[in-house]
Image (cartoon, rainbow, N blue to C red):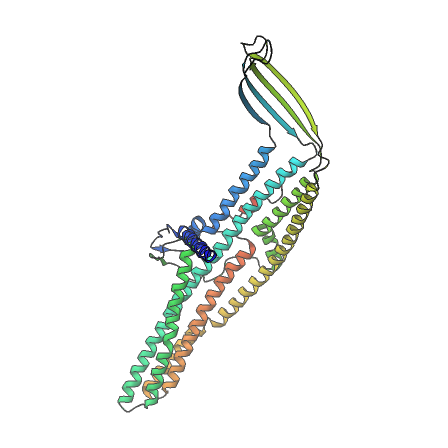
Length: 451
């Protein structure tokens, strides 16, 4: 019974802790402007998105660790103050109270490169963290762009569905008038009413899709869901200038992709750690200097006596019960893992570029095939409606023309959306960071370690 009560209490505590963490993570959502463009959304995400901020904090952590590595390899100094009381003086010239003041400076020298390897590894880890921030910025930028265009598509499909319902409603009215006048069968009226009801789910789905995408955007921007802004923008009429061949794209991506830069830097850090681990059992030299003032232990006992000393010691740790060997194995395994990650990143880079180019080409082909289709479908609907009024066309012809127009507008809007997403995915595959930071930002952050 006690065990069950303890389990319930522990579960309640963990639940309360989880709720507290979630509440803290969601607190203080930011108020956003009443209207937002895509560029403004990207800028807000760069400054407020929690994933980007987390990656930025990791840079500070790795810089602090690099500072720790440098600090442990620099001289240390310590001051020691002591006062001792004795029951009896320790000698004929000593007092029963003695005090001392000592300043000690210690410099440890590792002549076989261990310290240098550790510093290089720390610098490489900072470079990897910087590249990870860039990768997070690109990923969040892509998510914001995709969500922004998802909202635009949902708004366009809402308009298409609404226009379709209006057209079908007018067709119902025409069919009813003609039926009441005895000029059309009841079938025309029933068919129009059925078509009108069947078109409603598309409008409902489009509205709900926009609400869902807007909620995703507010999460990415860390914005207040209670004050949803209006988005200003449209699908690009033409894609930006991008590499025309896969070889050009690969060359640019190898130079710009932050995940590749991170993988290279991580491999560099792992390699330096292997070098440092191999030097673990190498001798080190320690230099020590001490300034000392004492009173009560030397003649004259009542006055301070100054002294100094300089020492040098050589340490040779020839046996550590296999610790250094195990550390070297761990470092080698970490480097092997980093190498495999680098190979995987290169393979992913190629696949991402190829996939993005295929998606972009597909979207371009669909758009080219649908450029005139919407205009022709609209003209066909107008002809069918006019002919129906005169009895030259049936209600089924009008409904088919209306359905064709709705499908044409939907396909064209979807194609524009898909091309915009494909362009963003292509830019992501290339490692382009705009509009977050300048285009040459990754180039400035060289992934090669300094000698």
